[in-house]
Length: 212
Image (cartoon, rainbow, N blue to C red):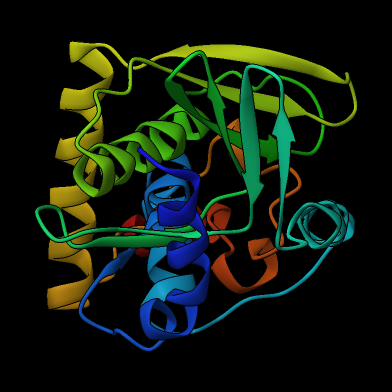
């Protein structure tokens, strides 16, 4: 696929931004992390910053400088829009690399490698879009963690594809129905910027009060 094709994608970014029928790729990450958080962000429009979200936003603002870099054996393009008609997905990539004819989506995250697979789902969703847009099979992606300055390899295998497609379907249903998932307290709640709105521990407290 020619480099000019990706320059065209950059120019089409404004068109992609105004299309409201599509699922934001970032919503898959949020849903996998916490379906209630996803509902608050993408169904009710609630969002509150904290230290972690500010660090993440700052990182992406540095990364999302539209541009391209040619290398001897490939190239890099930053901050381009990806879209899938098949899966009704849309989102801006942090970095797309081409090396020896292969394409790789690279997602930037603050901190270190997490305990859950929500970041991998986001990379796989980008790969699904790239496959549809270019006709090439994407077998590998990466997550770059800013605090550790290391890349984590993401194998775009059948299991990850199945999990990603299932999450796409779940998010599509959530956005269509607007039904609020129950807030359930887990260790993932620690550091969540929406904790004060969600108050997941109150669910159990109210239930105990009612039983008494």
